[in-house]
Every structure is written in C-alpha cells, then in structure tokens.
Image (cartoon, rainbow, N blue to C red; front, top):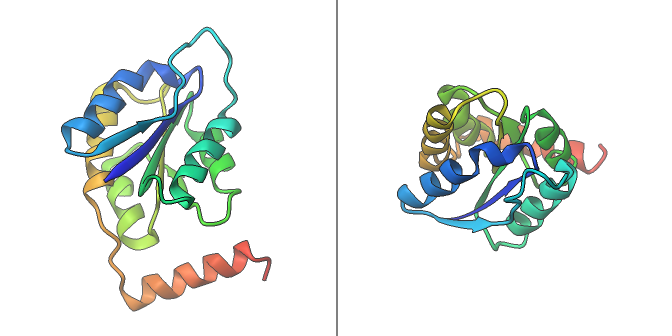
Length: 149
C-alpha cells in the first residue's frame, strides 16, 4: 500500500528508520518531508499534508512523527475522515486499525527509539479493519461527531 509519511523538525530523528521500515515491509512510502531538523516545521502543517494525501486516495494510510506524537495526533484528528492515534505500544498500533479503522499512526521521536518505531509500523501496516457490526456501529457514531451531531 502507499503510505504518506511526514515529520516535523523534531520528528526527523526517526525519519530514516520510518521510511526504510515502510519500504522493507513491501509498501511504498510517500515522503512528505521534512528532512531538516534545523528548520522549524509545525506539526499541524504536516498533519494536513498527510490527511490530504489519505483523503484524496493518494495513500491508503499515513504516519506522522513529531517530538511526542501528541501534537500530530491532536491536529490530524481535527480533519474529518482522519482517525489518528499516538501509539507507543504494539497492541494499540494494530488494535487501532482492527477495531477503530485508524488511518494515521502518530509517533513521538523523543519518546520511542528506532527499533520500537519499526515494530509499531509493522503492527500498524499489517493490521486490517475487522469490519464487525459493533466496530462499524462505533465508526458511524464517530462520523456523526465529525458532522456535529
């Protein structure tokens, strides 16, 4: 699958490993930058780029990396149709897809190292939405929240 991947200036610490792990797993990374830790790049801008890529169908999923993962997650979740979560454990990385149809994984480069990031990406990209009635029902409720109901 095509995976939109973006980093703010603090997220660049994991950049090489994240991009290589996506490719090593047989997926195509769509590199949305940045690669320069000295130039401040705001995480909401990167969240918007990843969201546009996923919503337009240019990528099936996204990965956002900032310092803590929190800001990227908060920003991405403001965009209708994006289901982003910060996951720093393997269970959440796959369960978020299986039960919640998570389409953007957020990671914190100041919180986790490259090896754990690789494990999380493998779990996230290897997971598929369960599609069970209870999960679909819950997603419909999330969509209603996005629409202001």
